[in-house]
Amino acid sequence: MDTLKIINEVKIEKLLHQGKNFKRAEIIEIINKGRRGKGLSLEEAAALLQLEDLDLMEDLYHAAREVKNTIYGKRIVVFAPLYTSNHCINNCLYCGFRVDNKHLHRKTLNIDEVVEEAKTIEEQGHKRILMVCGEDPRYTTITHIVESLKAVYDHTDIRRINVNAAPMSVEDFRTLKGAGIGTYQIFQETYHRDTYRQMHPSGLKKDYDYRLLAINRAFEAGIDDLGIGVLLGLYDYRFDVLATLMHAQYMDETLNVGPHTVSVPRLRPAIDAAIKETPYEVTDENFKKIIAVYRLTLPYTGIILSTREPSKLRDELFDLGVSQASAGSKTNPGGYHNEDHDAEQFETSDERSLKEVLKVICNQGHLPSFCTACYRAKRTGEVFMGLAKEAEIHEFCQSNAILTLKEHLLDFGDEELKEIGDQLIEKSLEEIENENIKELTKEKLKETEKGKRDLF
Ligand code: SAM
Ligand code: SF4
Image 1 (spheres, rainbow, N blue to C red):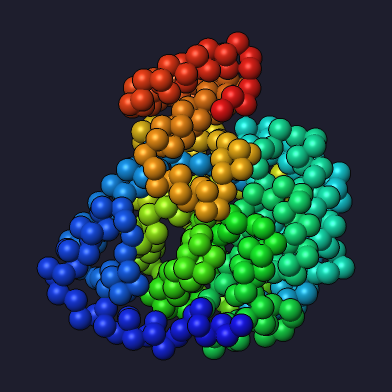
Image 2: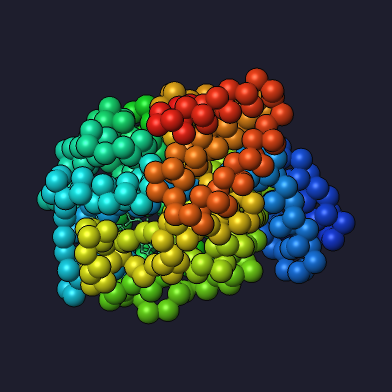
């Protein structure tokens, strides 16, 4: 397949160039169009990415907040990463796991250790995991990934496992689908071919096209919840964000399903990274702009925020369009049992526990959700996107968020969290407009209080 048809660099440059010429009134019009929650064109997104006027940025943030609240309600889905291996044959200049890093303590968890890690994550109260690993065919085989998935589903109460792993063949993706993967996530890192070549000098990851087409292979294998993103800081964010949107548009038009999620990883210091400085620094203000542009352009795509970002900024971003956030994360294999900083992929920034993060989310009036219902009710891919566009599903989502938060409060909450959480549940219940769903939720809340779990 000609991948230039997926990511057309000349067109991206042209759109960004044209994006500089929009007048203030035109930008206001684009923001107002975005506010209606029907998405934006690449031309319009390019214009917003060129925005520097702080007043207009405030308008943009406001619109992103509105779209997030209309489409997702106040829910923020929480999860934790589980690193299974830091053995890697690639040499990504920015990553602590790269093969040339001789100081890194290497470790691949055996299946029992994977389950032990998952149990510790579960004890924090999580229901959703993102499994992450390096790329080394001697250690991270498809069998290792699949056995890890099955063992965690069998031996813990974790209900959804998403995977961020190296691109694979259609056949291996099929095996992964059979093991019950949630979302398959893969970041192109940068869509800019020259920069990609410089950043990935050796190893299997050198092949830009093989990585780009992983989404098509996964889809062919039946995985239709797919997550994309770029590593912000490697190249000009305007180019890379617009390219991500171009990739999303391609997915929508060709696969009939846009990305389920877009992640916004921003480059962090890593042990012995070959690049000591961020090549294209992304300021906090521009980071906020990126999230807002994603929110307006792809209103039905989840935006995932990791603990790479500092706590104060994260708290601000919860309000700006982010719909999923990790919390209490460790980035070394075995990290939930052993704080070995010399085995980490990169330094996390928000080091707060899940409990602390939940308190902030609740105090802001957002509704933390541990819901995994859609995936288990087979509402994925095109079906999910279709439903997401209908009003009623939001009432169910709100109901599921309330029920999973209640479970969490009962099983893991301290006094303070229980108090804030219960007040939020009362308020969130009242926001459900459909009387039937409201009554059903109240009944299920009572059953949850009596000890029933996983009602959706
Ligand atoms: N090894 C597989 C790969 O590269 O696709 C999957 C897992 S890799 C550990 C997950 C992601 O971590 C990468 O796609 C990259 O975007 C991100 N990452 C790597 N180094 C980073 C750093 N120094 N700071 C922030 N994120 C980083
Ligand atoms: Fe390996 Fe992934 Fe790190 Fe690259 S980003 S060195 S492929 S773990």
